[in-house]
Image (cartoon, one colour):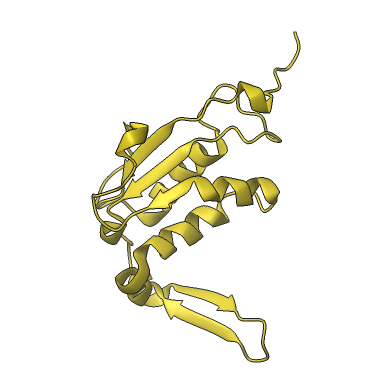
Length: 147
């Protein structure tokens, strides 16, 4: 029996909508990353982009457990001398909650051109409204407990 290898012409992309209200950030990010990479499909192949489109709604209501709102920090470097910047997740969630989720999902994707292509299929919205009704997205339930 041969191992099945998907070809780019075999891929059928669907649209999924995920409600992130009262769900921990890591739980949402890991399941969104699985859908973006296509690991939830039976035809998943590591070197082929098999993933689907994902719409995440209610990113303002994502939960962070413990003291992560004050203690956890997002750090990046500008490229200039002394250019290390950081912001705590409490401030980040107030000002730009989609960015917090995007950073978490991007960290779970491959660090290759494949991962850069997959992150472009992620659409994050702060509230329950989105502009992709024409694609008829299917609702996805997040596995695990809601807070």
